[in-house]
Structure formats: C-alpha cells, structure tokens
Length: 162
Image (cartoon, rainbow, N blue to C red; front, side, top):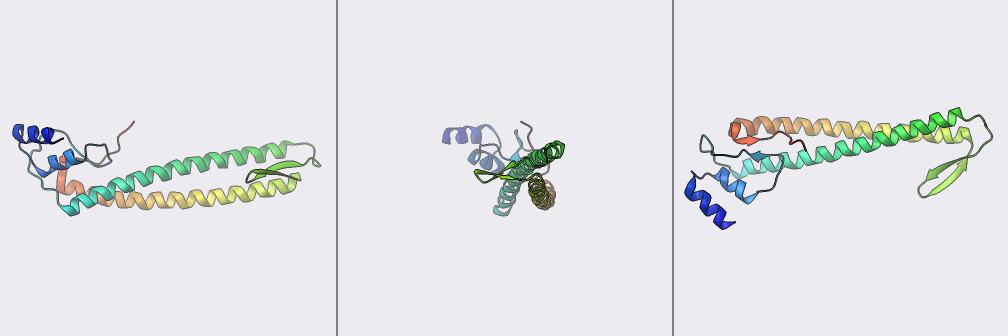
C-alpha cells in the first residue's frame, strides 16, 4: 500500500482527495472520481463526515427497500391465501393458520379475520418503512447538494448499478 502511495505521489499531482482514495479503496456510495482532479480540493474532517453519513444513509435506504419488498411479497401471499379461502366451497372445513412454528385450525370465517388483521398490520409496516425511506432521501438530497457544491465533478454520489 505504501509503494502505491509513493508511486502516485511521484507521478501525479497529489491532493488530499487522492489520499482519501488510497485509504478507502473499497467501493462505497460516495466515491471520488478516477483521474487527476482539475482543481486542488482539500477534504476536511467535516467533508469526510458528510461522505460517511451519505454512505451510511444510502446503505440503510437499500436495506429498507429490501425489507419493503419482502413485506410486499408477504402481503401478496396473504391476499392470495384470502382469495383461496373465499373460493372454498365447504364452510365447515377447518383451515390451518400458522402462528409462529405451529399451525392451528380455525373456521373459515376466523381464518379470514386473522388474514385481514395480518394484512392491515403489514400495510401499516410498509407505510412506516416508506416514510423512513422518504426521510432518508431528503437527507441524501441535502448531502448531495452540499458535497457537489464543494467537490463538483470530483465526487460521484450516484448509485452504481450491479
């Protein structure tokens, strides 16, 4: 790592941006663009804190979006189960409903009520998660404005598609 640092220092104009790049060679949401900077930009401690906050919030937003997708799949499964129960012709048939690791048999009406309650709970959880995502997006928007104002084209805050 030191040889890489030494070689870069001797072959190109060296700025603090390059030092940050060498200390943090892994990919993150906020990365410095490759190549020699057109202007000498100093990265202050506050700037580094903003970059780190941007990366943390980007990761958290990604996790929340994954959680929302999982809850939407569960909600769709509950809706499918509810539709299947409505299509059942035998009203006296007991339907197993999973609670934790155990299946408990209930009447068709009781099972339908339990499914509706579970769907409402999931919908509320999805709304809460979407609210958190929107608040994180506001924070990210503010940080983008601040960081692009200081670093211009020397920083890339756009999400990488994988």
